[in-house]
Length: 419
Ligand code: NIG
Ligand code: FE
Image 1 (cartoon, rainbow, N blue to C red):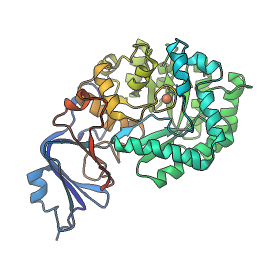
Image 2 (tube, rainbow, N blue to C red):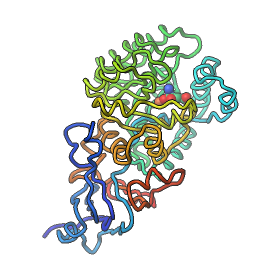
Image 3 (tube, rainbow, N blue to C red):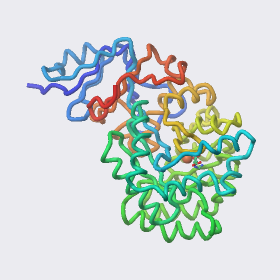
Image 4 (cartoon, protein in one colour):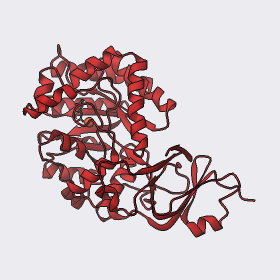
């Protein structure tokens, strides 16, 4: 006798499975292949997906038993849970006081140079207790979950001392266990150069003082660096990424956000998993990413919030064969939002992705960008039961109707965690 499922979602007008990308991230035309099933159903048992198909097939296979929770998704769209592959959500405080400076035209890096920006959040975070940082971060994670994010990468980087960076990574780990989202920890000690250090001195500290401890304690899966003229040069960034690679951390890079300065090229050379931002990436940089199979994690909410009408050249990247993912970049300065649905709207309107490409970018390609494509990012047998029921009648409606939450139900590991 076959066991029944714990949960079955059925009768979805449209079910996006994202199947067919199990070997590598989707690129080129592959980004439009989202594995659509009409009148779709998905069954979960013990937290894992056990059946995916048409409603007739899944019901005929006997997955519904007396104790099965059923969700009727008629008139709705079902997708894999969103993966947000680039966030800085572990911090205390906020920076709405910088809005007036920004409106006067003071550039982002000028605010940083004056001791504001990242430095301001470093101060408020250092002053906050573990409990305070966690409760503020927990609220943000709850908002993310309510908007469909079921897995998120989280970077340290508002500590900037060994002790504080280790504290942030420890709090990420604790939060990972204490709430529903899966968190992927990234060490980003190279987020800004604190006062009292030259760039070279602080780079030495990250390489010799921080990275070995972070790796020894096993608190991070990735290492990231803010590679930008005036923050960490290509040379300093290369030193940090090399050391991280020696210590068996996977790599990411904040590249070419404000200026084109060889960040994408460095990312490709170092074999990073993803290069992120890339607003000003050069043609050679984009080609190098394509050649190395580096994922471009694009952050259109950051472009929107920088308010310079400048977005990454996503169409060029896709044409050249770079797999594209999208993320919120959720942080208190350049992108104070938790919303992947808003990012999907911006991805369509300003990165010029189709709704299909945008969904690919926020699911399977985002899962690859955090090294979790074997577990999440698609609705396939054996993967985690991380599933969204969206209160939209078709795929175009999702990016079209913006500023509201389209999520009807969030299922995490087969359990309803938000509705
Ligand atoms: O990705 N660019 C560097 N770091 C963040 C911003 C962090 C902040 O402003 O607090 C980013 O945009
Ligand atoms: Fe960032």
